[in-house]
Image 1: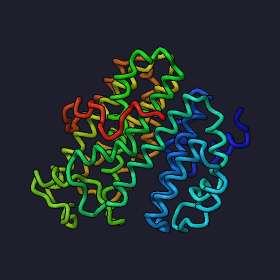
Image 2: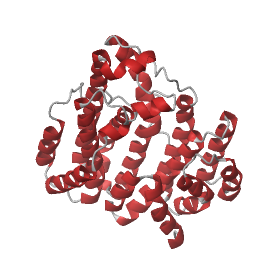
Image 3: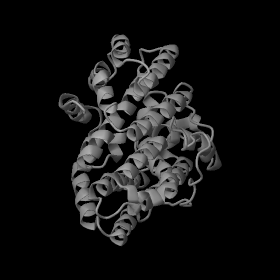
Image 4: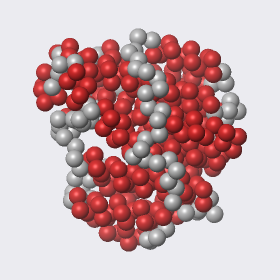
Length: 356
């Protein structure tokens, strides 16, 4: 049985590392909320290793490999945390450094779950720790080569999380098993829709860090060179490339809505968890579309008032798939839209069958 103090630590640290998940995870059914909180913290630990500016690439590779073994139960958590914590940069968030120091607590919770739940968490961490560094360590201010590279990056940092969450939802609600294949395909698209929205929102914050996740081929097609970002704010060509990516993200979020509508109506917590995130992402895309010359993520951030309104509207429509689609259509009105089946082929770089 999981220690109540370890579970309490999870609940206490979550708002410090993600305000968004601190809002959405508590609406999940109790035991599922515990597993999803733990899953998020495991992913955040992997992110913290990769993002820390004080670690060399060799150290990141070593600690990622060790972290996978810790999650698998093949290595104790305490020595891992004791050795990693002092190496982290002061520029890493205090909450993330605290999370690393308390890795053993998070792992004790994880190892108290069922074997099927542990398999889902382990698979996610393993794939993330293998794939994410390939992109993070080769990131460039010149962007990614093409949209397919963005698809792959989004899979490693978000699509695999969608697959993990789907496994957990299937375990919680066995009747969904008949929809497994469709939900798994939609889950990858769901993750990409949210991740692309974050990438578009954070374009200028990433520029400050000399990083760009935009696909060069998309912008070249519209006549814009990502090496000339200083002229982007006034460029129609840049705005056209941005709109194309908004259309792709919009299509992924429509797939996310379909995913959410497959969840039984009685599972109101899971529906809220999914739909609140979708609603906020769509409204963020609207802000970007209406203000292509924005200069920071703060310019297109959804206000707290809008967050509350989105939650209220979603909750009213929650039990009706038809009403949810109408609400989505109204929120997305005027947004460009790519083909909605654009990403439903299983990604070859992350086999969904891998659990061991």
